[in-house]
Every structure is written in C-alpha cells, then in structure tokens.
Image 1: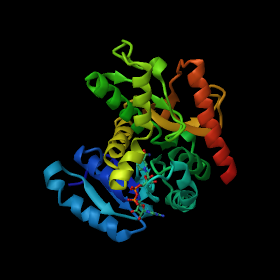
Image 2: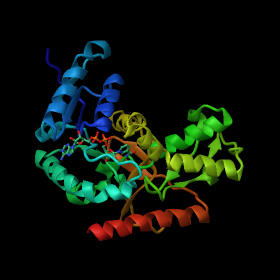
Image 3: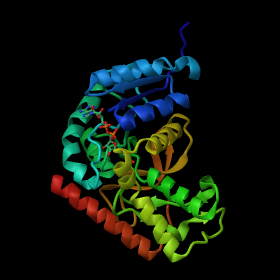
Image 4: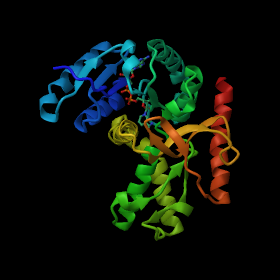
Length: 307
Ligand code: NAD
C-alpha cells in the first residue's frame, strides 16, 4: 500500500561509535520513517543497517539502509558524526586540522544532493566544524546546527542533581560557549523550580570541573563517548521533526550576541522544524559575559588561523 504522507528521513554520515549509537537511539525511539547510514567504510554501514533492520520487528516500522550522498536529497536532517575520535589526553581543538579536510569534502557531497534539509553537526571540535559547514554550504545559519553544549549541560544538570539528590530533569542549568575547555557554567541562572542551587563555591567548582572534563575521563576509560551524545542528538532531532520549539543549548552563528559575531557557540536556542528559530535572550552577569567573550575569542582565533 502506498501513502501520500511525506516520510521523515534522517541521514547519518559517519557511523562509527557516535553515529551508530545515534542511529540505534533514533530507531528505538521511532523518530523517523527512513534512516540512511553513510560511511567511508561502506561495509560498516551495510553491517549496521542489516543489524538494525533485524530489530525492526521489535520496535515498529522504519526502513534502515546503507546509502549514498544522493539519499541526502530527501532527508529532513543530515547528521554529521564522521571524523576521527579524540585520543586520550588530546584536546578537542587538536582534532581540528584532522577534521576540517574531511568536512570540506562531505559538505560538497551533501550540496550535490540538492537537499533542503537541516544539517546537524556533532563531530569535534563541534563549534568550528559547524561554522565551516555553514560557510561552505551557503545555507542560512538556521539550517546548520551544532550539538553545542547540550551534552555538557546534561552532564552539568546530572552532577548538580547527584550532589543534591534531586532528579536531573528538575535542575535548570546551562553550560554555554565552546563545547570544550573554554565552556562556562551559568551559575547566576541555575535553579531548581525557581529556587537557588544550594551548593558552596567549592562544590560548584567541583561540579563544573567534572562537567568540563567528563569526556577526557570517559575516553581514558573506554576510548570514546557515545551514549549520552546519541541521546543529545536524538533530543535535537525530536525538536526538529516534531516542530517543538524546544529551548536547547545548541551551537549556532552568533551575530551581535553580547557584542559577539561571526562565530558558532553553544547558547540556548529555540529549535523547531526550521532549525534554530531564535536565540534566547539571556541575562548573564559581567563575569559570565567576560568568560563568554574569552570562549568566543579562542574559537575566532582558531577560525582565523585556518581561514
Ligand atoms: P569513530 O572513529 O568511531 O567513527 C567515525 C566514523 O567516521 C568512522 O566510521 C569512519 O569510517 C567515518 N568517516 C571518516 N571519514 C569519513 C568520510 N569522509 N565520510 C564518511 N564517513 C567517514 O569516531 P566516534 O567516536 O564515532 O566520533 C565521531 C566524532 O564525534 C568525533 O569527531 C568525536 O570527537 C565527536 N564527538 C562529539 C561529541 C559532541 O558532544 N559533539 C561527543 C562525542 C564524540
């Protein structure tokens, strides 16, 4: 039987640890009708598609296949998780040069497909990769989104919740700026249903350091991080495909945002089926503003050195 309904399609480019875990998460949560897996290692994409298709009878109907860039044409979302994983002790910024070359060719292939979809970048350093993808693609910035500090904010909320024995979902707290070493916690806005977060300065410092350095610990322990980022990407995809207008800390192009322009950084944004609909006007204090500027300066100087 054929249907006239437009099928929701998500394509994932790079089905390594992050890409395949994201694919599996999206499949389990029934976020789309069609899931396309694309990887330079075609055998991996074929194997993953077969494996996931065999699970379809348990989760409902979805077509999963190992595809090509042509399949991006009808994709609502194209997630890029291709690249090289972070080595133990390697900063995300050190990944930069290795990943930029890969991204140039991937963006070219996506453009050739003629897609009108939204590009969602997860590869690190994610703010820089998103910026170059946006510039290379010529897409409006709304349609090129980085996963930004959504994962960092989840780690932050989890750790605050652990300290206070409160469900992380009831903790409202944000990490903004670079997804990486110069990110900053917005303690001035952190709250539990409007109440202050009752943590000492030492406890706050401990929570933030463990948030910021979480990826290093996980990579040290098992080589890569992929479960929580898969859930973060699922969260962004859901906001897009369900046109939720959810506020999420994604990486987006800043223009006159606290006097910061021409750089991608993680800030709270309204995400719907147009992509990043708008940025939330934050009321941050002078210290936080200063840290945000430092984060932006760091990324801008890196962008300049590559440009
Ligand atoms: P991985 O090595 O397991 O997988 C990368 C995949 O990309 C491989 O399957 C490889 O074959 C594929 N690939 C390489 N070049 C390609 C190309 N030109 N076209 C298509 N596919 C290509 O790595 P991973 O652990 O899955 O990490 C992927 C990326 O995600 C890294 O940059 C990592 O740092 C990043 N990451 C980001 C976050 C975040 O919060 N944004 C979290 C975790 C990991």
